[in-house]
Image 1 (cartoon, rainbow, N blue to C red):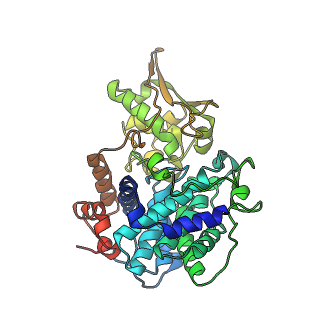
Image 2 (image 1 turned 135 degrees about the vertical axis):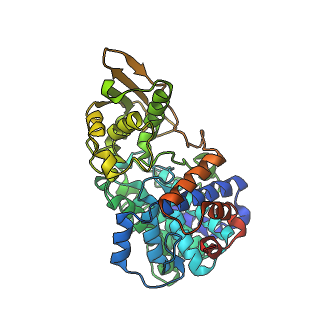
Image 3 (image 1 turned 45 degrees about the horizontal axis):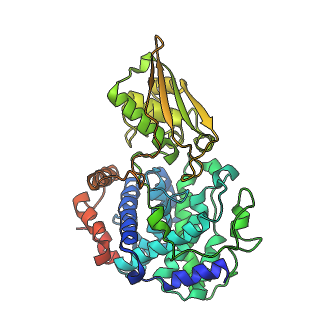
Amino acid sequence: MSLTKSLGRFIADLSPNRLPEAAAQVAQMGFIDCVGTMIAGRNEDSVRILTETLAPGDGPATLTFGERHAPAPEAAWINGTAAHALDYDDVALRGHPSTVLVPAILAEAEHLDASGADMITAYVAGYETWAELFRRDTGLLHRKGWHPTGLYGAVGAAAACANLRRLDAETCAMAIALGASQSAGLMANFGTMAKPFHAGRAAHAGIMAARLAEAGFTASTDALEHPQGFLHAISPTGTEDRDGDCKAGTAWAILSQGLGIKKYPTCYCTHRAIDGMLDLVAGDPVKPDQVEAVTVSMSDYFATVLRNHRPETGLAAKFSIEFCMASGIVAQRVGLRELTDDFVRRPDIQALMRKVEIVTTTQYDPEMPGAAPQDQVTVRLAGGRVIAGEPVARATGHPSRPLTRQQLYDKFADCLDAGAAAIPADVLFPRLSAIRSAAARDLTARP
């Protein structure tokens, strides 16, 4: 059976009673973290402009857990953009799964009045579909200029929404084929409003793909594996696996890959180096005016993604290792309050950024494609003293170094404060923690 059809059958057959308990728990964490980052990003200019331009009418789906409502497709588009606007959302599978899946599922679930258990199942359907595509190509999509979140996300969201709508196998295959034809996202747009737009647009695409397929709109049921199909079209090297057996539903990727919960609101490629810098200055505080040079060792791939070497805005600074190192020295933190235009433009930050150099390697960690085996930070001070940080192989928040429950709540509460949430953190966090026994509309209801 073709890959597209096999995935269609997997999506149609997946039900709450077939989920491993650990898979449901990962999905629940994805909902918690994504809702937090969505609310934190709700007042960003990208979200405001998109909302004003779309000008959605009233509907059943809640916009960013606030007072306004909209039709589900537009709500998913806006909410997905908000969730990714600060680049604070979780990471896995070479992209940001929850920032696409959660907005699409939540909006459509409010429309359908679906249960939390069905939402969790839809998330796993979307995650496993994304993972099936991810594992079939070892090439690094960023090198080709692709933003994987926009590419894989449209297909994953289509799978999630098809499952939520309980479509049959043939119709599910049509839905993910329609999702594939809406895949988009360019790395050249990193550091601008277009990057979170990729995530929101993928969430919107997923809802529309499932709805169109259910209404009889057709697509090719070999759209993923065809020689002119999705996998070959996006492959950086043309070495994708189009013929192998589908593993979705048998080898659970959500258990082996999990989710990396971000500790810092910057590109994930910066996180290991930030950990290293913050550990370094915590043990031996550094005066900015004493710094002669900062050296960051990382993979050439990470360095390619971190394309902004002299940022002047908070958005651009999210993709600048130079900024992250300067912020770590000056503020001894890299958080939401540092990712502002005013902080980035401070003379001491700009001066320190010019002292950061990147040393790259082409040796990669076999378990983390594109990453070096470890990243390391070294600081040279006036007088010749050199302070070397400990090498960091896994960032804080990686599945092997997970945030504690308290750290997850603290991040969630900070996000709700940043977004001036209508629902307090001590109300919304428990709701999302008990999502499987709730209904979609209960989650967004104001107290």
